[in-house]
Length: 116
Ligand code: 5GP
Ligand code: ZN
Image (cartoon, rainbow, N blue to C red; front, top):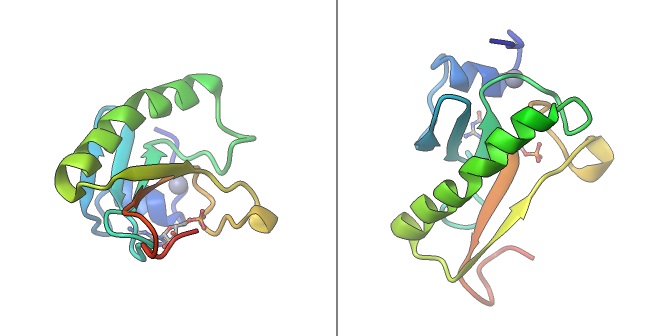
């Protein structure tokens, strides 16, 4: 599998640093963000290292987004939000800070929930 030895998310995939897992399958891992903007803020990543959407093959994107409804259901079950945002930043000017492709799932609880 394609990994980058210096990448923090590859280290999470390999179990070298801990994360609270929300969902996992053969190709995809979802875990709580270390700095949650709302309760249950989760990151969904391909297990293989692709730095951003420009590097992400369509097949890997398909496998990742195929898992997103199951991740959303797990978050709904655990945190009971009334909505959620699905977001992805690509490149520094767009706010990307970890260069292993990831999708943010941000549960929403109504006005004053701390996001947006
Ligand atoms: P970006 O800014 O690249 O779209 O999002 C990167 C996200 O990764 C941030 O929300 C940040 O809090 C999260 N993050 C950075 N390092 C770690 C880590 O070691 N563990 C976890 N669980 N999340 C991390
Ligand atoms: Zn990586």
